[in-house]
Length: 475
Image (cartoon, rainbow, N blue to C red; front, side):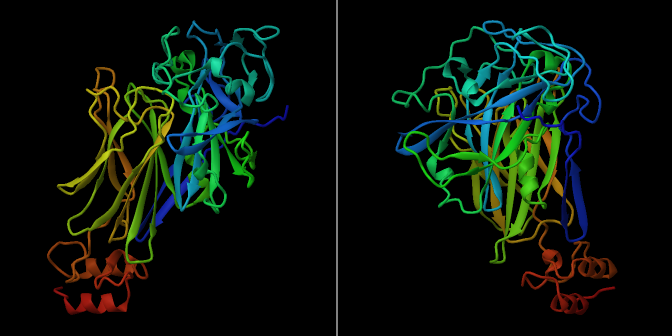
């Protein structure tokens, strides 16, 4: 088996615009992944070694491919980790996801049900191993690794729905019954990573980048405070030849990136992506990533991606401030679809622009089937605006879907991201204080060549704008 050293470094990505610069450091593992061993058991995805392909088929008029990915776990903690199979719930569950970066944005294009662990080999992918026993015991030893091939992770007997699992605590009802699949869903597509052929077709996705992602959820890992580093991803390419029995071939093109979910791959592709993790008290972690760019027609595109790593309360709304005078168009939302019969809606979130705020929202938590942003899932929010981003990042908000509790009282999460700027005054009063003076001149000069002090609306700050400001000077 190919060995791969544990990545201990933190990722850094930045965002710079006009007057200021914002950068965020990834915090993928509060459980001690900055160096040394984590206190208690700490399971991570040490490698994504292989991929399995299954017979593609058509469902509801769409042609789909079907895949599974391998996942090699490592216990990088200071205590052993139980691996007792069903119906006991003291073992890991393993979701698998796929993502695509295309046209400057990242989207989740497929997700599986979860693999249930049944025993653990005692190998050495991530370093020295203190074996918990011979053969394949129901414990993963300290420092040890356990390989699950793509074939094992794609075996439908051990794939079960995500729904009954609490991702924050790691607990689930060990003998729960899976929902029945929709009538007519082809058996080869069930429960595995189901991806629309058009999302992979090289002729339709020129220049796209792809990522596979695996994650481990375990109650002991969560109880030890080590659940924030449990997802890893790996980049892959898609072959050009479609097979009627196996779909498109997939080839891994880079090593596994440990300790980070695939949303961080967006920042690896585009270095102007801003990205940061947010932990909800008494709950789990969300990651927000964002990017803006000019459309070439005088408007700007605003792209936000929110990943729910392990929040049980889930996301129920997303809000962006829109200053007065800003025109917003092409409002859109994207989420991966539930296909396998889990009782969740695929209805897109409803967008409203009221009182200076653009908000997307799903159905309320009184509807248990609402399309909330559940764990190991990423949603996209996007729009165009006729102004550039503000010089410094603003505040957006992720509303939590499930009701607050005594242990988790928050109703929303404040996040920092690029937001539209206030349109500059045509009089040259750039800071809207009622005067045109040295403060406005300093702001204009700092924006020279950029659109953030564009008084005449031609898309850039230039001598024409300077002349307009000086003509309106009040001192």
